[in-house]
Amino acid sequence: MSNHLFDALFAQGVDETRPFITVSDGKGGDARTLSFSDIRRMSLRMARALARMGARPGDRICVQVRKSPEALALYLACLAGGYVFQPLNMAYTAEEVRYFVRDAKPRILIVDPERKEALTDLAEETGAKLLTLRGDWRGSFFMLQMVQPENFEPVACDAQAPAAMLYTSGTTGRPKGAVLSHGNLLSNARDLVSVWDFTENDVLIHALPIHHAHGLFVAINVPLLSGARLIWHERFDANAIVADLPRASVLMGVPTFYARLLKTPAHRLRRAAANMRLFISGSAPLSPALHAAFEEATGHAIVERYGMTETGMIASLPLNGARKPGSVGFALPSVSLRIVDRETGEPLPQGETGMVEVKGPNVFSGYWQQPEKTDEAFREDGWFITGDLGRIDDQGYLHLVGRAKDLIITGGLNVYPAEVEAVLDSLPGVAEAAVVGIPDAEWGEKVCAIVAPDGSRRLDEKGLIAALKERLAGYKVPKRVVFVDALPRNAMGKVMKDSLRDMLLS
Image (tube, rainbow, N blue to C red; front, side):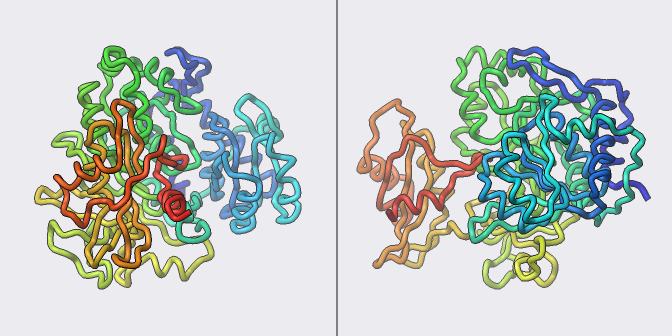
């Protein structure tokens, strides 16, 4: 038996001496380059180093390090060794890390050197071995892997073997660890290589964080599986991205990336993007207004995709065919998708809005040590309940209308925030908007809007409400509009609606 995912990622048949990662200098040039062979050898040394430290197949390896090629190699090392990669956001405090480590009980905890002191007591408490790693050739784990031989034989793993554990955002209670298998990740990567036509000729700008499914599984597994190359950015910087666009073919990003790129002078952005093949957006909804503005500025229509931690990617707009603003396209080849009644689970007719549910080899097996939560997430017939509301139009395109928990029921009528947000975003002077419901004695819930102006004109509550009344049924129009400089977002660009509700209620 082979190692299901690791062997597949390095079986693309390209010349292993070819560059795989080019670390950008931020000016359109190279600061450092590693070949496919360099990354594979480093990964195998790291896998052996983890084994030397006592790790065994199935053990969790908890990682809180800065984004770097070494951090990428550590992910691949966990695949090779049969370990379960557990990445954590560098923004998490020591107290937040304490929850994840106590919950996952990792064999080894690898952190940035600056975090070691704050986490030493936690490692001693839980019995995890504490090591450090930073991408500038620093850290005890980096030194340990340097002295390992490269003849580590990847551990045999089948499709069901756990490969990674990513924690959900915890918007409804404490975060849950979603356990993803080798088969989940490989099937999803194969689907995406196919629908996005990835080949060894592609060059992907990688500016996403790698503690999240988008930057880790999509933006790493897909290029490896296809033999494509990466231009590596530690973080998103619009000027640095624009400098690298002329030598790239694909950019994967979140809507915030594209909003910031549009601040580049139009002639410079269009010239830089002239030879790009594909712009992809995900992790948060892409507003129709931003979709249209980017296409007008660059001539490229963004391909929006839809996914979540528990399922990987579910759907994507097509390469060939209409890229409808406000839609996330069609289910991926190996994914089944349906729209059902929220309460009964019965499939709904085409065009009706209901719960989005999925089934396929991409869907995770369950939450770490939480069988009750796992059972709640699946129907009896095996369909996974996404928690997202959506509809499928007469051409088969999926349209998302928001999270079920964000649905506003006012006076007994359903208001889907995405519909109201799309109208707000299209109004002159509005940079972005969010719509939430807050308790109301008369209506049950009251529709409220939080608006960030773009500075082009003066906005006021009365004027926006009047404009909305011309385009929306009265029960959908916000009863209150609050102005902010910017909407609060998490690391992946999702609007933090719980924070907005708290702000309105305070």
